[in-house]
Image (cartoon, rainbow, N blue to C red; front, side, top):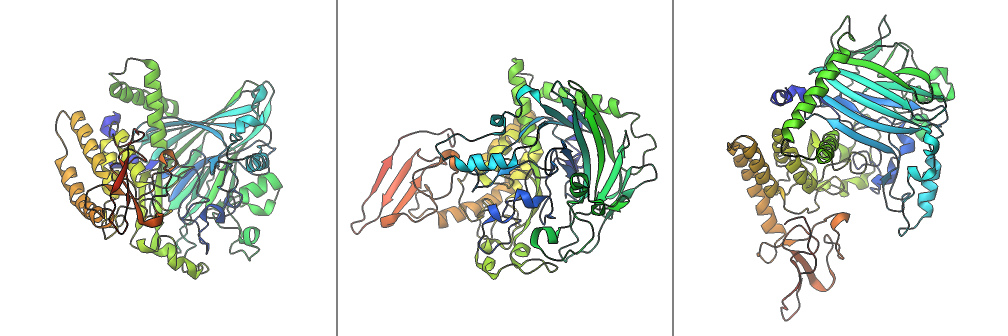
Length: 576
């Protein structure tokens, strides 16, 4: 059944397309100096409406993030709602940016007809400041200070929060939140399933503002002119809270606010008792508040259904649909893994596939609009026009893309994506082919033929693995289709890769010997030289493949035209 769904694109209309972290990204940086990692922070995130995307725990949404869903939590001891994963920015972590949470992507079918993840939440106050201060105190030679090192999980004083999704149909999503108290004593927990619209109305291009409001039965009715009417049904009805996905300008910047209700309204009401922060009837962000005390060793289950149209009995087939989608996912992987005999290997591979699929994300970024600023917002500093990505004004991205990691790297990287596609080809070859073609489109690829590297500098040079990945995906797909290959895909990608090859030989092959020059290869494969910088004395770094040392040639030009010295030390798995 899952294989049949893969042939129908709209089964992927909804999926895990929210980021795990929107703050600290280039897209949300409007500073003069381009210090993106610190210009927006975790502390700001609760009160700031994002321009280019949304974030959340177990985030789920439509492919344009017009409507988003995620799970929020409060243990009655934290100073803020747990609405997003916490982590350190580059100045706080002794080893750079790092998420400081415990969560696990457990399962997913390729169409996201079934998905499951686990988040572990402390019953004592989450140690935000302790994690910052201790990691900042440590040196780079010290180990990182992790959440598990705080001792807050001793005596099992934590909640296991399982979040599952099952699609009854393409626009009918069942949601099950199961919370286990792993401790011996009863513990309180507010469970807040949250639904909201991405803010598209505050920027000066389109002032249409969708709405959600409470029905007579207490469900949340949702109206959006692009996706239609939806309802968020709650099985065990609890209090509905509404606010607006709007920036709290006074709180963040000391400026006058432009609306009455803000993105942080539910947090303000629940934690600080601010009755004026919420609207009980309507808004652009809403939560059900399940205020529970879970006995030691006990559990609570919250059942919801987000569906287009109306359903007079939304939970009649709830358990049946979940059981069916789990069985179909099991059957899909049983076929994929028929040649794997070891049960442990099958489990490892299946969860690895889950990690890949949970890390899909809507990547939305229009460089021209970002550089100029939005009509309804203050103009950004003029220094930006001569700063990062100014040569990529043509780039207009708005697609579901495989991320290296939706918290640490919530942006695509060209050569990471090429490797991802090899894995995706084993379970969803059409998605793999689409990803490889995506970067060759005119609104991605530079007019000179260069593929965009990553948002920190689209002009950086990544190893030339796109053509290799395209042919490997073709071979895998051909094998899975009984020897019938997708020649049309090869022809299409080959045409654009010819342009890319022309860029390589004109820009990155000074000697005309087809040996790679320059380019950032990442901390996982770093060399002693910065390959993006001019080396002293006219030296030039060349390498035969995408590794830091395999086939390395160091060429030094002088008045006598000295030759090259080869360094053959070390081998890497990449490029073999």
